[in-house]
Image (cartoon, rainbow, N blue to C red; front, top):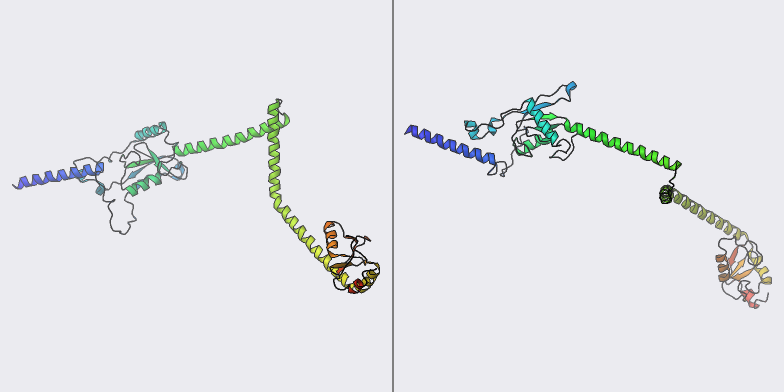
Length: 346
């Protein structure tokens, strides 16, 4: 009975191990990592350690293999009992790696960006090829291993225990960049020579000649417009400063005129106007008590008439409408009562 119990326990253990292996292999149920658990302290140690045979400084461009240290705890129970062989124990030889690289070159995988980060392969980031001939950035694929907790290809899910650093993607990127730079430079030189040739030998055909000169005129007008837009702000600033200076000059002249008008003897001018004034020389009507303006030349006008005269002579030096001499004015509304008593008979 004891032997039978031991055999039964062995059969049960093997069946459980096989079921566990099938579940983990085909991912029939979510793993423990997907189940929500209470937060714990983050373990800074990377679950997958990589031993790399790093090249020397003078051999920086040589390819080398990065081996992953096997963690026995990651094997299923069936693999630990020896029921199934581990699939990631076999290491590739140098010939196998060359075949995988040729297969990647045949598929043009190196000319395409990294499938994880979608960025091209550059000299500052190492690229690796897996045993399934898929190519990734080294940092990208290692991050994938760390986050997924599985050592398998991100594309085909093939288990890999090693990867090889290659430089074919970097070489193709450098070649593409050089070709692009050369094409841009050659195009610039060709266009420059063609424009020089057209300047010395304009087209003979009438339609082509018209198009050529239209393009030339368009380029010239665009350059003039750009130049104008650059200097427009400077011109506006200059005009604003000129306008301010003119306003300051006008205020100065007004102050000078006020000073001169204060020195003029308006009483004598009024007496003289009493002898001359009879009617407004602008509207040819009699002067009455009201809004009248007396000039320094002793001529008298209606204020409204004189304002209209000055308005129409805005851009011309103001002179008296009668004697054509420059003047200063003074409004005499109620001060001509003595003149108007005599019915303006002077």
